Image 1 (cartoon, rainbow, N blue to C red):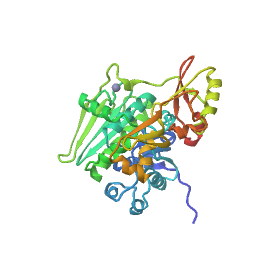
Image 2 (tube, rainbow, N blue to C red; image 1 turned 60 degrees about the vertical axis):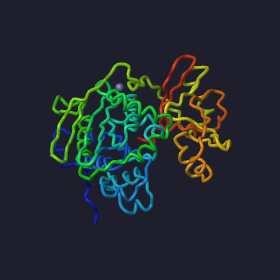
Image 3 (cartoon, rainbow, N blue to C red; image 1 turned 90 degrees about the vertical axis):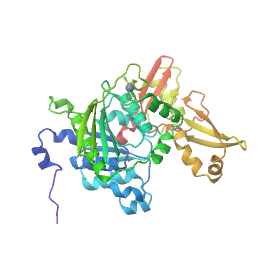
Length: 397
Ligand SMILES: [Zn+2]
């Protein structure tokens, strides 16, 4: 039987006069984390018909996730499927008229900054402070609001951070900040942290908090035609207590002077012919033409390229040739290195600045640890430039 033509949300949007169908259809939302909260958030975004959702998570599904993750099935745990990929697939089953792009990787070093710049709002469904700290840096850098959700037992909180109003880093205590600093030496910390720092949660708090996050995100998407209709949580914290059925809103705005997170990248140059798939050598020559400069280098802000590691005891050198974000996987997948890692230290030989005499000119930017559609920081003889690898944009259109 032929199916009737149906446009998603027809009835809903005529009833809900404050949300506009076209706005929602054209909206782009990035969801960081595809655990219990991420499942709820993506499900609601899909039901609303948000046109393009990006889901970022590096983790694989385990049986223990099934009790609070509406989009996961038992077979996904047995096949060790990636959370981001399953969330994307199931959300598009719920609503075939939207696009959901999964990104398997960590939100800091493996998501192109162009994606952060291209979205209307970011929703944080994270379970560690360090991941929030890193996501906040990226959102402030891109000038985007982000809606943070957190759940523990029967309680949960929602906070909205907006550049110029409130910042996650500004709200950290000295002790929390020092704790994060101790662990940010390595690009892989996000991975270690998130898989270790599990808290007890219920499917109820995940659905309540996830739903509130999506509602806040919808308000941000409609901010321009708001006219004071919406009471948003920008600069505020909502706290829900399941034990007592109470919900309170606290003022939470914190925007300090001289906070390093407020570094906004502006005047970004559109590198239409540039892609992270290009070789270093090709990129240098294209950049010289594009920027009209003679000398340049590339600062890797979110990752490092490791060419080798040296073990302490016994002293031995291992060729790696990978981004730092892949180093843990590399060590864990090599039996000799894995054994060694329990009893010796590895010293890394790495590059965080790519200069014109970089010895591995035939490697691509991706191989160095610069993701597709990223924005690169380029110091030159004529000053500092930020250049977007816009040639990759069509992959995320
Ligand atoms: Zn700040």
